[in-house]
Amino acid sequence: MAGYSAKINDPAFNKYILNTSRWSAIFSVFLALIAIVGFFIYGETSNEMENPQALLIGVAVGAMFMLVALFQIISRNKDKTWDGVVLDKKIEKKQKKQNSLNNDYYINYYTEYKVMIEDNEGKVHRIVNEDDDTVYNYFKIGDKVRHHKGLNSYEKYDKSNDTIVFCNACGSINDIEDDYCFRCNCPLLK
Image (cartoon, rainbow, N blue to C red; front, side, top):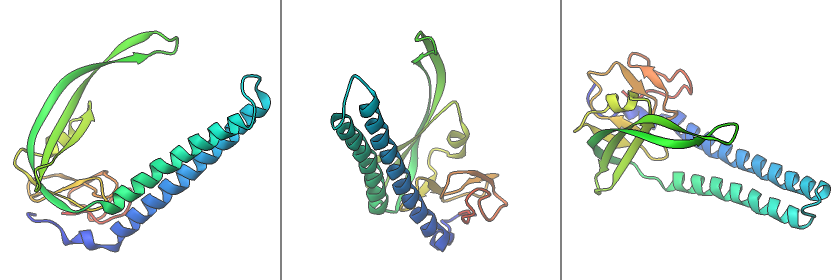
């Protein structure tokens, strides 16, 4: 199974990208409405802030949600297909401070797995996972990969020794013998 799959041209991928953009827009409008209504109610019931000041803050927060979604949609549409190679892989033990329920701090220890991919223009892209080495183990240094426009994943050129394959649409792990993703039903690129 060496080579990039022509199944990327299946209409299911365009439908997935369109649905992802649509749901981003719907979710951002929903969050914006919640922010506007929530701040309006707060302005009506609170002694700390009154309307229209509270309402204006709600509108600003709502606009921020919508701008983030718009930025995601635009960047997904501007995305390009490119080829690259797995440049390096690293494992790092890390820690971060976290709040507990009673406002105390505790230290959370975790392992960070990084895969660095250099595209054909020399830019390095990183795949980073905490306490999950599945992607780290899937890729080998020197593997040729392809990033497909609008999708947040990488297709390996040579999948001949693999027992799993990642769905290039939703990222779910699938058995290499399957033809379609169990979660989103897009064709598996193999």
